[in-house]
Image 1 (cartoon, helix red, strand yellow):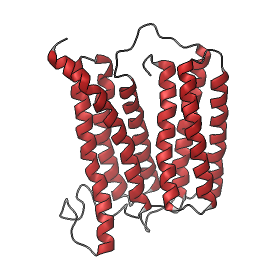
Image 2: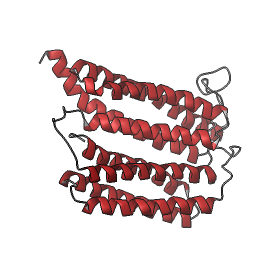
Image 3: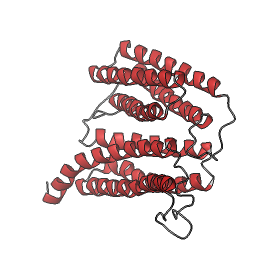
Length: 291
C-alpha cells in the first residue's frame, strides 16, 4: 500500500466519525435556534440582513437571536469541510464502494443550505422546517453508513430473509416516528418566531398518534430480538436502541405533561437523532458485514 493510500485510509476513520458528529450536532443547534425564537434572527438569505452577510448591530435581545441564527449558519461551513475531507479520504484510499456515500454528503449539505434559505424566505413555514430536518436525517444515515463501513467489508455476508424483512419494517417505522415528530413539532408552540405559521392540526391528536407509532416500534423491536436468525451483534444494537427509545419516550411524556418546556423539547430533539442513528446501525448490522 502506498504512503498516500495508507494515510487516506487512516484519516477516513476519524474524518467519518467527526462528520457523523457534526451532522447530528447541527440538528441540535438548529433546534436551539427554533427554541430560542431565533429562527428569523437573520431574516433573509443568503445574506444575514439586507445588504450584509454578517449581523448588524441591534438591541441586545435581538442581537443575541441574530448571532444564534448566524452561528448555526456558520456551522454549515464546518460540515462542508468535514464532508470534503471524507471525500478526499475515500478517493485516496481507493474505496470505490464509499464514493457515492461520500459525494452524497457534499451534495446533501449544499442542498441543506438552499433548503435553509427557502425556510427563512417562507417565514419558517413548518413544512420547510420539517423538510430541513428530514434531509438532515437522511444525511445522518449516510454519515452513519460511512462510519460503519470505514473498514473493508468481508465477502459472502447474508442475513435470513425473515430478519431482513423485520429490519426493513423496523427502520421504516422509525422513520415514520421521526416524520410524525416533525408534524407534532410543526403543530406545537415552538415555531422559531412569533410570526411563523403552524400546521392546522390538533396538537393532542398528532401527539398521541406519534406516541402510538412509538409503541408499535417498541413491539417490533421486541419481535426483532427474539426472531430466529437475529445475530448477537444485532441483538446488542437492539438493546442499545431500546434503552435510547425508552429514555426518549420518557422525555416525550414528561415534556407533554409539563407544557413543553424548551429544555425538554431540546433533549427530545437530540434524542430523536440518537434513536435514528441506533436504528440505522441495526439496519446496517443486517445488511452490511461491517454495519
